[in-house]
Length: 520
Ligand code: ADP
Image 1 (cartoon, rainbow, N blue to C red):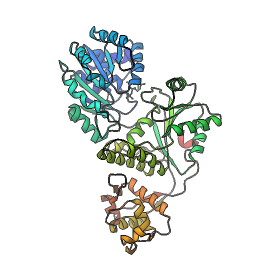
Image 2 (cartoon, rainbow, N blue to C red):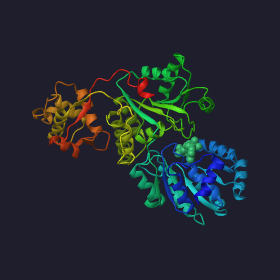
Image 3 (cartoon, rainbow, N blue to C red):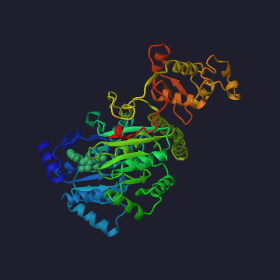
Image 4 (cartoon, protein in one colour):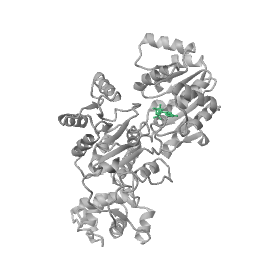
């Protein structure tokens, strides 16, 4: 079965071998099993339904929320000699009729649609008259409220597919699924655990770095100048920041493009084309940029601000190095940036339960900025790969500052938290430790605690930062919500009992963190 599939891989796509997971997914689909495929961005998900589409009788429907990408996908398939089309709100009435009649007459092997399309009776009626062998659901995490891009229309997909006779095989695909989201996708789309194929999330050619305590503007200009001739994307949190950075790079003679939803489509497309065709090296953008941009030689992705969760971070950073060449993913980290994201979550129309979930995700993103452990391992743990090894090449693994023993300070913090009954957040804890006697501290009687003021040689900010470090390293567990209280973990118990030592990198960072030979 796979020999034929490999033949298609070579003749239509020009690749010699399947990538990890592709063969397993294709095999299951060809056997008619409803399957969930989880692969990192750039892993090669499209082939997993395009090859079965060629092998199977009838047509394959591809459900995708990314309307803007459908045309590109279809153009690429046309070039490869695979008849396909898309139906979405961007096409005119007559075009729509022509395409629908093409679908009816078996002209296409693949048809891309947005999920809402399945809700129109006319479309469903046409589907009931033709043979559909496979329904591929791209970006399947959109079905889960706990994912990072929930779309209510995805919830209807399973019910609508069930109305299609004979029953088509379903292939759900996503790049970003935590264990909780995975379970949700399986439940909502009715796919068994045995039919889940997860390929490693590791992208071997990516080197992760977190840069903190530096002037970000200077770092950015310096990095881009040192890497001139190499393509890269810089993500900023707001349109305003994109404009500002674009101007400031321009003023320094760096030709960069810009991309955000506030620009005209014409201008956006023009910059995008220039970037794709290597006319400009750098693109400054909000997260509106990049979905499905298949530019393989992106050598670096810099996040000027933190994104709202690890899913978004890994998806955006993963746009680097699709060609398998060494590439850098750099997060310019400033703890205060979480305020922008908190604000956006707070202002959103999500219900309280979902908001809490989002705050929890944001905190894990922040902990990525604070951790001193292997960054790649942190990411892989987040996505449920418990036994991921350290990578040996990320900014933290290659950080050769001396480690200092901070066990005693850690014990001070932990015992203070215990004495405060594990019911307060970072700021209050730092105040008690540094000996504040403000009204609130006194009203709780915390000025009477034996741990009051035991870290008064440090500032409140330094102490709060140390608490962030302890949280990132897993000694403290924050509760959900926007003002989390901190509780001790099992690991904290070991430290308090003197069974575990806590080591931390020396405070002073050498000015140029990402200096030449560290990166290349
Ligand atoms: P995803 O949707 O998982 O982000 P794509 O399907 O867009 O990834 O594929 C990412 C890149 O990998 C594309 O450039 C694609 O042509 C390439 N690719 C896919 N499968 C293979 C393969 N078996 N061998 C080599 N390159 C591949």
